[in-house]
Image (cartoon, rainbow, N blue to C red; front, side, top):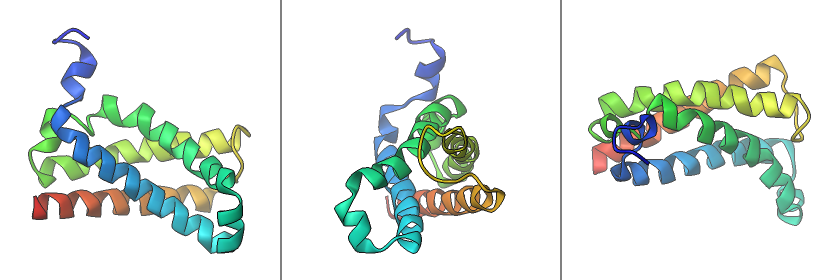
Length: 137
């Protein structure tokens, strides 16, 4: 990858802890949602079901976060820069995830209330995670 390439300006190795925490925050939100609709026993007996819930939103995150700058050099400097970049990345990531469900590539619905819940809860989870990270780092 050339040093002056678009992605080289959007990806910083120092953002690895942010990436791990972001993915965990997304998985926690999705797991809480899944457990509110299904019994724990069902989810434990059907791990591929959970994978089908996680996949569209992780795909959306992988598509949206790098170009928007969630892992850019600026994102690793401070919560003031990092949190807005993460939220600006999550909104299209959530919409991509819901879109993948809507077209039938993954199970689950795409009702308007679900879209709103995903955008809001994901934004809060990622924003809080990043704020805490910079507070304790």
